[in-house]
Image (cartoon, rainbow, N blue to C red; front, side, top):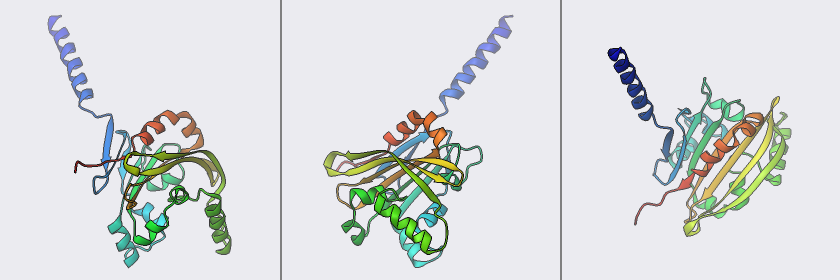
Length: 225
């Protein structure tokens, strides 16, 4: 009996040690170590290159893509059992895309709060109208329809950094997808850091508190000196 009890105690201790050894979060920094966030460890990390190509419209192997790769860092995380970069635009499980852009001189001159809102997807009325007009002119149906704004918050930070956090719905195909978009312009006006969390609307409503924790962890880091 004593031996059996000892075995049970050892098994329990081993399970506790195993649980303690597994982190709850994956901690992420960008290439230059200036932007930080965390996601639950249950999210799988993906190569975000295909997302970057889709959003930028640049061609693989082109000079524009080479220049963009030099200035842009991106990463993606998917909680689906079958992770895939296409889940950014439609999934019953949450998807996180984060990117940091070193701005060109021309881009720096054009950065505004509205530009931060539209940095990944069309959000403001002007850019949504432009997106729809371009789709019509090309003879195709817009992928994003039925825009609904849920919230819009202006963010201010120490040392003069500023940003926005916008939550909105888009109908993509047969489903309504909710996006939570945070974009931060650093105090020098040199970089824009963006986090986009996506999930079908019913998923987002059920897990809003979890998404808030992820979005709230997204911030700029400033090294001493």
